[in-house]
Image (tube, rainbow, N blue to C red; front, side, top):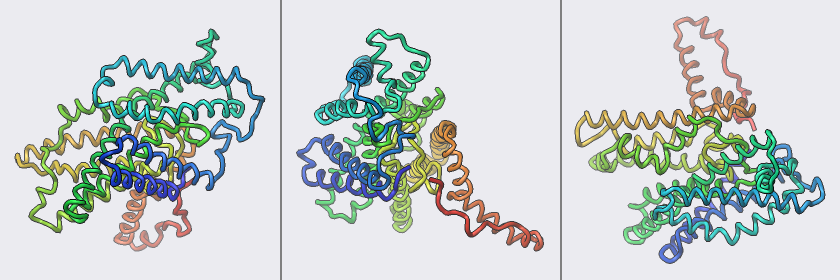
Length: 436
């Protein structure tokens, strides 16, 4: 579905653009402008790389043919555009209605939209005009929304399409503002790291630089993924999480919900930096810091593995490369393990009781992510390709290989030599590559 080498090149292009702009004009250029330029570099490299790698998307998967299937009909195109305008109007109304979006927290997102609009508006207009005669099903959710506004009575199939359309845009409308704001904040953090490097050198700030840049990669790919949900790039949303429980366990991990949950219910640390606990043990401190960096880098690369297709609560294709060659949920695993290493909840200046309480609270948060993983798997198993991938990971993923190694070791240590000799061994010809 994606090519990890292409995505690594895109991540490099995004990071270089990001770092150059922060270093060169970090004090003068709007952080959101830096996010947009860096995201554009990522999107351009992925789009060109995938076109070179496999050509245009398969019409059977994207629903968009490479040549026109019918004569251009202005009425159909304008009706679809009307549906798109109705969609944006509904989102704008929600932003106006809910007080959450009236605070200063989301000011960077409004700047994001203002800077994006001069490019997005003509691009969207051209895309609707170009894609309409090429669609396998031109009577899509946009067309039905526009038709309903013009007085047409919707059919039963239309209601299903519009519901899916509404859920997909709800995901996008909820998460894109958050990711844009977080990415803007990341620009400020990296700018401070560069300033510290200029004052005290690279070596004492290398941990902070790698740590921040790992999260920068994650956030840049998130922003790109939520902006570019289009069929022509094969990055459209195929389906959204169908259960209320799946939505609940995902949304509670983000603002504004987690600001309450994390403060009053799952506060699992005492705000003491991990380095203070290991300051008297420099070797242990260095190893611990390396472990944290390794985990956050895996986390960033897990998002990069999606290319243009990252999105919560949606299915946009199966990813089987990069960190996903070794685990179905490398992002969740690395993120949750990094929290244990960063917050060290099992150590507390308030004693072992506080340490136990913090550890149990973090374990509860880990459980939330476990539930997220399970609801996502249930959603993705609707695609037979994911079932094949999950079976392959169970046998050839990191945990599968460990289990297989333990079984082999157990047979070798078995007191019954006949059993040890007759036990089946894994084939050497077994494929090491995940299914495409």
